[in-house]
Length: 105
Length: 233
Image (tube, rainbow over all chains, first blue to last red):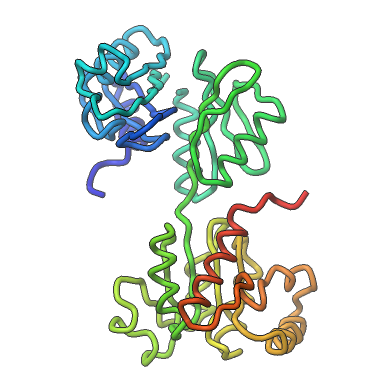
């Protein structure tokens, strides 16, 4: 594993004075590329480490994370084939995931 | 997540303490849950705490339903380890089986003829004396220890360190008669019945195992059962 640890990176960004959000896979249905508990940390500039889907919804999650850093409100995001936005971001793999996004206070 | 929570979570993870982070998905309030205590702003009733600890035991993060709405329990367990004392025939199938099952495996055997890379590829071999190696490895609550050498000079010092550790599983290969003699030796070392009772002997689940691979299955099954067992009330 060469990628930095997600929580360590989140703490490092935070102690460097940056706004940080954490996204966590909290529920999955059907085929899902990343297990429950997978995390992604995002800083206020949009840099991120970790993964919640193996790539297909990261863009949308990062956008929500940036909004979350701005307004501080936690969010519960649903992605799945029944979700228009999910089609847009490419989660056509038949799985559904629910992702919790929160700001590191 | 509060910065305080993040700092404590990282410290606990670094210390290899099992801990779960429970987060209320509406409010973001959170509570850290250890096997024996918990702390945080999120109120959890006994049922929710039990469910969080069950997730911790099962090593599976999950969302639980509570009276106050869904709470996500993210499990941060240290890696499972298996310490095998004795680079013997049974250890050869046991090592890859345990690795596939998610254990970091270390094999201890000071006899260089046994502990060779050719016999044990792709596993950490430790050729120190078992008690010295065990003191260094510091078995924790996510560690299983099995002694397989049949030689009291090697098995007993390892068992003595294991019995003074919080290892979740301690197993010793040998017949009932062998174990009875071992119990007497451990008593002579000052261990009491409760401590000695932690040793699974004869080792593993009774599945009629005969071959080394079958005995390895029996050992791994015994470890797995203990890993997921409800704690004694």
